[in-house]
Image (cartoon, rainbow, N blue to C red; front, side, top):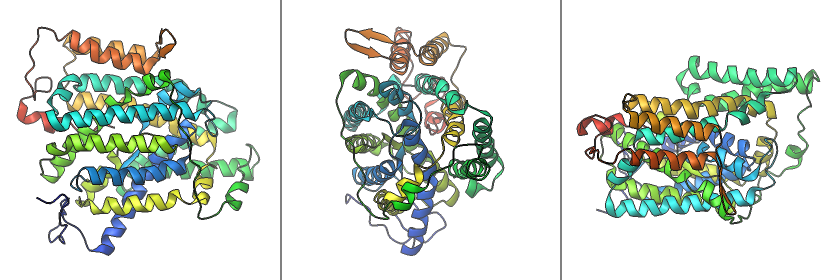
Length: 446
């Protein structure tokens, strides 16, 4: 079997990963996937004070790296991961608006996370993924993910607090995004975050630039920025405390990617398990490359999985088109200047939704996987992790500090394994599910 598929022209209504549409249609589908990922990929870096233009650029580069590592056989797009937001804010002390002035240590931590992730991928390539599922079952990954969302609650609340007009814009953005996500046509619901940004932006312009109730948005930088030019890259610095805090996010990324690859396999009717390790490796390397240049950590995107499920087009070539389009946008300073004009109250309203969804998605993970909370092992693991994460419990050892997300991760993994001593759960069983149902139940995680 050749390293890459041949991608013959598809003849049926369902386009599998190793086939393609006519080139014109492939281009259109690629742009559709670019739009689907853009809202989250832009929002993630803005909430951390990163350059969204660099995030777009490295999302395209990361997607190409992933495509190469899996031999063009797993359809996925890699965009900004929200799992990094809490630890980046903790490391940098980011105030919540404008560029992050202390980005260097965070970038070093992102590289460390990517290296750990890539190492796990290499190990899985030789040993299989059963040990990953045993070490981090849904009770554990859900607990850590929910702790991340709850840890960010003070940041979200701070973003919506302010004078009356500020609160109106923030809550207006929140409500508009929620209404779009529930009631809009399916195509618009897929880009609800992007639509929410646009709605909140217009509301701010009315209240700020027209009515004078808020500081007006300045378009001076946008007017002078060139259409094409080199982005401003950032240099990472390597501080042990930052690396120890951010590196454990790799375990969340592993859980996300594992769920995504299994879900894509179920959608396409293909056994993609042989590519799990290569997928981890590709995502890990992509995260390292992104961090080395000033971008965020990346992960496979469920938004693009939704587009595939609706269109039934799984051709991996459409993600190559989307990746190159994202790279082109990354080399447009005018596009970056436009993103930097998004007002703070708009980001605050979206933060409430996004951070809340991080926690709520973990509840769905527990439900989908039928996690048995009558089992004290699961109940204690989740309860302890949630309190440590939401309370931001910090442990200082010598000159190193491990904050809430780190302690919650260590507690969830360690306590679950400690409370499992003497118990024998067969490999392939997810909390009582027979082996044949386990993979089906383990849906995508984000």
